[in-house]
Image (cartoon, rainbow, N blue to C red):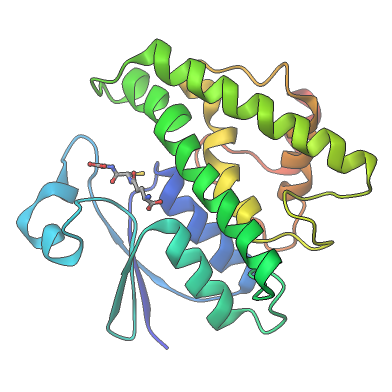
Length: 215
Ligand SMILES: N[C@@H](CCC(=O)N[C@@H](CS)C(=O)NCC(=O)O)C(=O)O
């Protein structure tokens, strides 16, 4: 087994993979890609790996994979012997994929706001922030009603899934895009639960659970 992650330390999409691999105890090597300011993800050598010019890319024994959601599914199916992180029962599978798509919408809004403020990307900041708030409101209500039914995670399962991993980073990094989570208490409680998953690992801007009380 030889896994290589093409990684940018400050990327939430790359962190999704680092987080799941940490939880599953999967060993991997990192090849750093200078996303900012170097824009190495648009260089010729990187475009040969991913013609979309996007991070992350993961290579497992020569198999080249792109898209964090697809890679989360791959890693979970291959390296989680319990099968719980990415269920295959049709209704459960579709629920997880629904939240993977939702995570992409979070990337397009909350992450865009962060890139606009922190890395000088030419995005419509107000539109990105408003879009993120709309998604966070939906997510908060979903989690709030779930808690009333004894559900801790985004999907109906009693166990967290890749849906939680996919949605977690850019929710947690939202303040860097000037998007407050003050009005989303169920999201804050859910993010504490994610931070308590055994094997959880941090990234710059995302702290361990002990700090959550000070949020
Ligand atoms: N759907 C993709 C989105 C990946 C993505 O947006 N990656 C960012 C870095 S975090 C990127 O490479 N952006 C550059 C671009 O889209 O040109 C995924 O989940 O992997």
